[in-house]
Image (cartoon, rainbow, N blue to C red; front, side):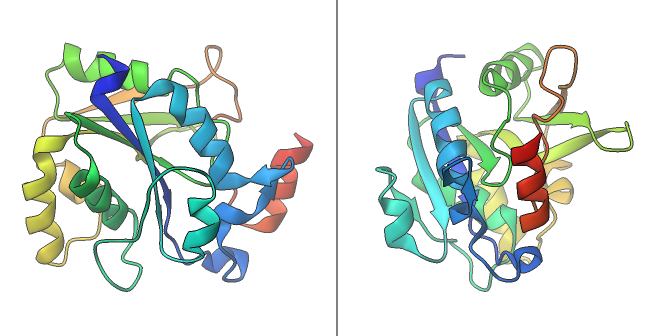
Length: 202
């Protein structure tokens, strides 16, 4: 898959409730905002990039890429960011990454793309080992065909908010990540300030 055929979106539109309401994507990690780390890691892997944010838009615009709020009201979750990305991208594929996982693999998009093409899938989703050692899907690391926009509009208009319930309607391949090929911290997401400091120490 040609990287130029993929638009990347950094999802930074959440409430930050587990960070006391702080805007998670703007929290400092090793001297830079979390969302900027994610953006810089994503940009070499794709053609175009954008950020999905609902607050502090000027701060996100300072990253130098387009910033788009949720297409749906009231912080409905990551699918709203998926929808925003599909509405704004002009490439055949969209890839989504969250703002709170700054160390995701530098070949994430290539591996998702290879799996999607091999399996003729409409969606490729990462899976990775979590703290208990179990391999679990990481649904916010998702490669989507642009043609799924209409399906997602219908699903969300009907009140759907769960990523897995929507992806189950489409040809989806789950792509395993994890050691030894990948950094064991690659999919560690910092939900609280304490977890963010822990990730810096590690």
